[in-house]
Length: 63
Image 1 (cartoon, rainbow, N blue to C red):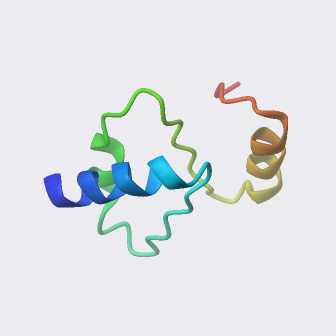
Image 2 (spheres, helix red, strand yellow; image 1 turned 180 degrees about the horizontal axis):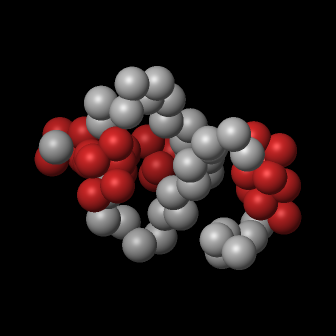
């Protein structure tokens, strides 16, 4: 898990948006455990348009 978190940290230093695709949810626990409080993690679960709007508007609340 540490190796993946380190890799994510490195990617976030270079890119504003990172899309994590895990169709089998094999890495869901690792994704959820990523500790950086400066990163907002959004799940796309049948709400693709809503997620796009949240990203474009810069809103990150779950309401």
